[in-house]
Image 1 (cartoon, rainbow, N blue to C red):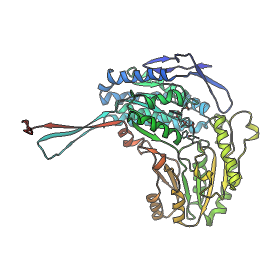
Image 2: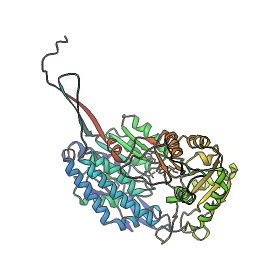
Image 3: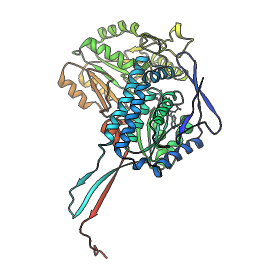
Image 4: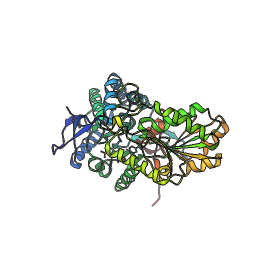
Length: 487
Ligand code: NDP
């Protein structure tokens, strides 16, 4: 069993208390390794390391070109170890290997994107009504606390670290206590680049313990969080104590809307992939499927016809399309929602059970579809974050739009239609940060990611992602130097 250590100030360290946590494979219960369980005090040391690296270390004065080279080296390191990382990701969080391989390649892409962008950060010179050389400087914010979830462990680490480092910040990253292994493997890759000590610190521990310190500490200048909305609200309150800059990427209850004129087969595929990729544990999952009533019956039939093709099993098994949920507690939560759906009177079309043959091995759950869901039901309103799809029939475009926007969330939405005018009308009216037309889920490092309403604050990725890690300074150099004679 591998004994992992956290990476703080350029050193591999254990918790001061000696406390450790076992990390499991949710697909078979095997212990994959042991990681240190950092306390708040340990986290405080990590924050000090990042603070020192920012205030006293060479990183802030490193040229953008050099910072870019570090990030290119991280990307190259990820690519060299891609298959090892993908296997570790699958074993630790459960997703099918093909999905993990995609995530790892995309994490490398993300580091490359921001490596290139490091040298493009620039201020502006403004024309002002005075004899003044007036310009704008863009500067790093400082120490960034970054808290990431368990559904895309390495990819989320890349989304957080790459833009922050490109902008010249120092970072303390806390992965989920359930899935820290690829983040620690990333620390090894980052160490090999020779990055100055303390610029990146990767720390293991619980959210309410070590994680909370990142939101509370006055030595942290910015906190960036991806996870549940309830936790995001708490982090926002804690960050308010020191008016920290914050970025929040939270939950969603995303509508995937199928009109009768859509390409039928593509929409069926998109509905299933939107709902069940990564076992539905995706903030942008199309968990509300709005289907135009005239095709509702045939669409449901086509969905059910394809469900048996979703092979359930350990993510490392060939052909598996659905792995286990991340933990026993999380499966309990998803099952509780399935029970709520039954009690609310929705029609359970398939799933809702633990597969018999796999039940003793891991936290598996069948892909589950409820039909005749009404917009007021809890299964249509609350984020379930599992393989549970709620079908809501609709009659008109106006009704579809009204149902789509009737949510406290606003992360993503899908629209399936051959009518481009209708697609554009829907895209303009839907209150969500990401809109897909005739596709579901693809996103790009070049494009902004984030939510309207309670799905978050700010945007990650693209040029917006680097903005989130920069301060803006106004500079005026007076070219008419003389006393102002005010007094
Ligand atoms: P959380 O939001 O609690 O966890 C996400 C991250 O936040 C983890 O690193 C967690 O650490 C950390 N964390 C938890 N509590 C705190 C805290 N008080 N202060 C600082 N950091 C904290 O999600 P859960 O895992 O509990 O899942 C609950 C629900 O959240 C899911 O069912 C789903 O609905 C939603 N969710 C949304 C995600 C998204 O991508 N938008 C991702 C994950 C969950 P640790 O794991 O160590 O506790």
